[in-house]
Image (cartoon, rainbow, N blue to C red; front, side, top):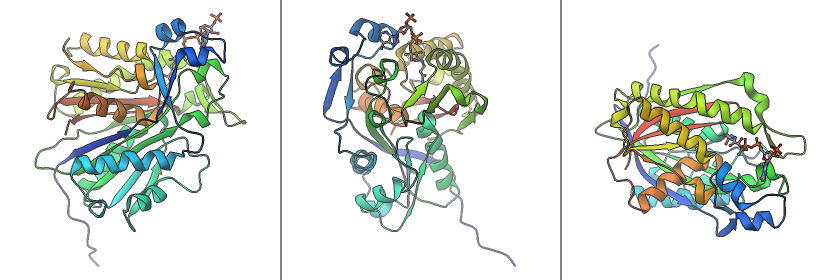
Length: 323
Ligand code: UT7
C-alpha cells in the first residue's frame, strides 16, 4: 500500500518578529540595595546596566501571547494563517500544562499543533530549526515560534551570583514558505556530560557554575557559529549581524572577536541587548533582533548569524535573513 506524504516546500524564511519587555525596569543600584553587589561589578563582569522584571502575577504564557501577537502583525498574518505554535521556554512552573496550547488558544489559533521546546538558552535557535523543517516538510505552512521566559520565578532573589543576571521577556518569529532560502541549516548539539554546570536545585532555584560555563561559552560557541556559516554555504565576511545568546557581554565580545579572526567584518553589527535586558534565556536572541530592527541598526535583507547556548549543556546556531 502506498501512503500519501505531505508535499515538500523548497525554501523558508522568517516573515516577522515581535517582542515584549515587561514594564518594570530594575537597575543595578536597585539590586545593590537588597544584596551585596554593586553597579561597577555588574557592568564590568557581565555588562548589564538594567533589566526588566515581570509582575508577580504575569505568567510565561502572558508574556508569550503579547510577543506572538506582535510577530503575527509584523508578518502581516492572521491567527488562522498559523498552523503550529512552538514556545521555547525553560521557566514554566511545571511540565504540565505546557505553555504552547494556552498561548495558541489565547492568540486565536484554534485546534492547531502546539508544543513547548526546552533547550534552555539555545531554545530559540532549536525552535527556528524545527519550525523551518516543519514548513519545508509540508507539515505546517506557517509556524509561530515564541521564546518566553520568567526567570525571576526561578532565581533566588537574594542570590547575587544569579539575581543580577537573569530577567524576564518574550519575543517571537513567524516562519513560512519563501521564494529564496532565508533560513540556513541548523547546527545543533549538546554536551550532556556538562549537565551539572547549570541546573534547577531542589528548591527550584537556578544554580550555575559561572566560570566553567563562561570558559565553555567563550571556546565552544564561535566554532558552532562557523559551522552554521559553512552549512549555509557562505563565508564569515558575509555576516552582517551577529546575534549570540545574551548571557554576558564579555562572552558576546569573545565570540565576535573569534569570528573576526576567521574573516568576519569589523563593521559586523553585534547584538548587545544584554546591557538593557539582562539574560532572558530563550527570549534573548529574538529580543535583541527586534530591538535592533526598531532602532534601525539592522535592515531587511541583512544576513544574521544566530547562536544560542546554555543549560544541558545545549547549543544551536543558524544563518537567517532579516525580514
Ligand atoms: O545563559 C546560560 C549560559 N550562562 C552563561 O553563559 C554564564 C557564563 N558565566 C558568566 O557569565 C560569569 O561567570 C558570571 C557573570 C556568572 C560570574 O562572573 P565571574 O567573573 O565569573 O565571577 P566569579 O563567579 O568568578 O566571581 C568573582 C568574584 C567572587 O569573589 P571572590 O571569591 O573573588 O572574592 C564572587 O564572590 O566576584 C564575586 N561576586 C560578586 N561580587 C559582586 C559574584 N557575584 C557577585 C556580584 N556582585 N553580583
